[in-house]
Length: 69
Image 1 (cartoon, rainbow, N blue to C red):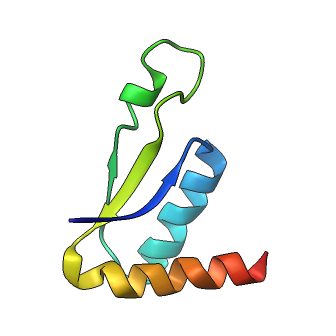
Image 2 (image 1 turned 180 degrees about the vertical axis):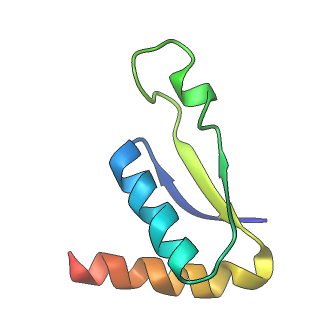
């Protein structure tokens, strides 16, 4: 597994899930529940990881997102 994204922004996390799903990339979200343990919102960064063989393709999808602004 390889980390491809890290965020505390739940809206951005939702969009990343959508983008990678549309690209046919299986993702795993780590620390999502830990981030909300005290009820104040995400304090621990939520990590998005993919299988190693999908990491380059996932990075390419996310790089396109950065270029679009």
